[in-house]
Image 1 (cartoon, rainbow, N blue to C red):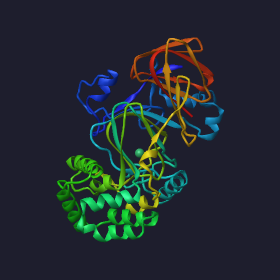
Image 2: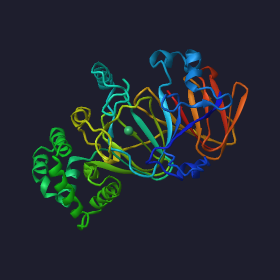
Image 3: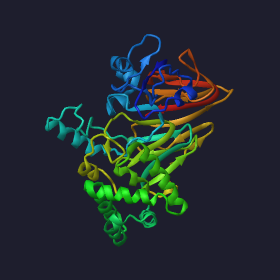
Image 4: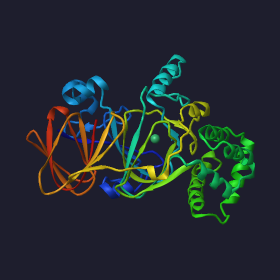
Length: 392
Ligand SMILES: [Zn+2]
């Protein structure tokens, strides 16, 4: 067991204050601190705090002891990436392909000779990328298609004449094939029609409307500040908008459009970088590939949040895949035991927590993390505050 030294990613959309406020990680150059990465991903591998060794090297030197036999044979690497993500401005609307399509797409683009760093490349690895976010501050996002009757109701209220025909078709076919037709037509509007649609949308911003429509308009207006002219300005009328309170979580399934809008959260995901974009981005968008990777099934707003199963002082999230597990461990004055079946990363969310394993004692303050190899078999934790626990 050892403390980790983690890389901070300074992406432009990141908050300049949130990570330093929550975790006291200094930001002397006033750069956006978008993400802290905890894991062995080559895009930002953590290091052993004392000897500076890369976590990926430590794993490679003794895979079966560090990862455990199951993870070694099932994944061959650390199967998850744990992050803190602090969004000041909205991130692109995105969809992650499922496992089978990731494998096919990755080998197809390899066969076509498209370089891994080519900006038109869709598949950077053969993995799926399900995600869970656990909010640390109020956290705004979009997740999944709204129920079709809501989409119709919203478009009736804002009334974009240019989309008269597309909405009419959705009313006739209020099912997943109607939704696919509607979404595809909107994504593939000619530049000229898109211009008229966005002009009429802007005019609708000031109409007297219901609360649901007003909320969607507010999201759209936020997006307009950063992505004027982007088709993603229509997304809040098509996708569920959701605001998590601190301590609430949601799961993001493969093949489901989603976007992070604002706030700071812990995020855990399978170790993958496969992203197909659907708006709010100056980056490459491959619309036919996107449509092929979207499941056109609405999600009820009541089903968006993932509730933990509470076992004593542990909140266990019932993740429907085996790439990662996620728990929140609440420390208290009693020493609590946790058994280990894979490599784990523990991240101290607040206060002070002492973790002990194999005779080694590590004191964690907020923002610090520790790596526990599978061979440790167990650890104890004690103190005050929450530990975010990543494992698989
Ligand atoms: Zn995502």
